[in-house]
Image (cartoon, rainbow, N blue to C red; front, side):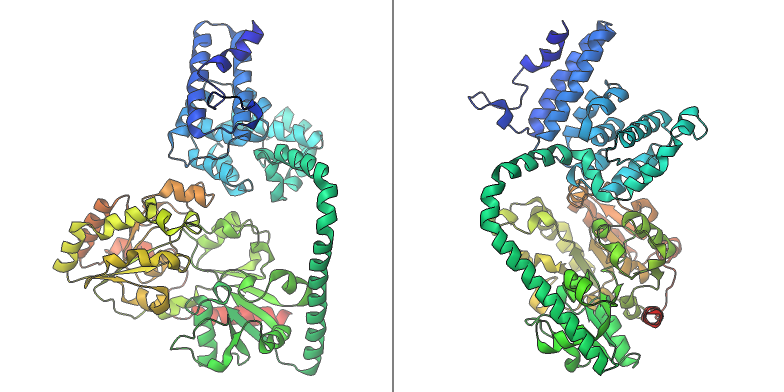
Length: 620
């Protein structure tokens, strides 16, 4: 009977998720539709055995269900966004299964199963899309603090893993701090925390351990063939790197012995831009004569902007001047990573003593921001705009030393205040990773393009622009420049389509805009700094969260009263019309809310950054 219960769902409606054929079962992958189909079959079986009131057979079927769906997940090639029916169907199934059985048999998918069972679909999607997403894991447990039973089961399981010498990935405190179980196992608590400090161990929870064993076996079988062909290439690669490191280190020692000059190097977007925090700070240092040995790093094919203060201080990469200044540098200021100025392995080994100052791409109070969680701890200083943002960065980027984050404000904010807005609406959406490698014919069929097209061609928009005497400026993210030509057909007297080659600098565009339409971009905080309204056109929020491996945004939309959310083009045009009727003005409560996110609202952000850099260089 037990054997029949175990295989009962497997003989119904091609449960394995494949078409009839001769292919062996081990070669199959499982689509979301097939898993939904199987979930319905298993749920029907569970409900039938629950009605029969036979706990023994029910427990056997529950155990078999968890094991079967764990294997489905191991062999799944795709996990949908959080809004898919996929997760809702799985929740209906898992709600019928005991938590202990999930913890005991789900192996590498314990956390996603429990997240789905509890209804936290965004957390589950974020974890399934990114195996190292400890932010979603920690937030899930913080949400479950009221569920002592679930937390305690997971905590005990984590300690058992530590006791057996396995890699522990759960950082859950026992809900009963004075319980006998807690006292008996307290000696393992520090061991738990020590393992938790290593983010890569989170892979154990999500299938990497099983996949790793397969990769290891495959590598072992083919090692002899691979080693014969690749050892020379590997050796030559490392030889070149070591030679470059030694050469730069020798030049650095020689040049620093010959001169006392201490150079600050500034760059943005891997040397491809002159419009963000780095450029504004660079101009400030030259205009105020704060630091004379400061240079701006650019790629060879990048044109200088018209307002560049001193062309002699623009240094092109891979030139002798660039190498000489690199060896003399003691401060790097950048907005993405050290790659803006110099490759990180070279920086680490060949340029000791260089202070790395992360000026940030924008305010991270909303999102996404967490893409830096794996590298932020190697920066010497990171700037923030308030205690709230500092706290969120410590949590989202897993900062080990809170003293690295300094509250100074963003340098580009200095150019925003005191500017009068024109009758111009700025439409600027952020980019999508999935669009990077799309062919033109695929892009025009994408949901992203169709939603923008629906808004730009909406009849109410054209009427509104004419009645209110408005211009709509469409500005694309720099990663989207190859697709910008697809929007040329929407240009008119009222709609301006900007291209990357002749685009107005971002700070100038923000100064002119009376309202901003964006989706998730951090430039919304530039508008909040100026106390101007923002419309969030979020037509693909669940897909965006899954793409960026996020379970949610740092700040809730209802807490940002200066911004309104629209899910489609009709809501967006209606919200824009309401703002136009109010002359694009925020009320008193909205203005107070907008400035409450900033510790400073003045024109001294560059000065505070400069003083911070001076303190850092004096210490070194």
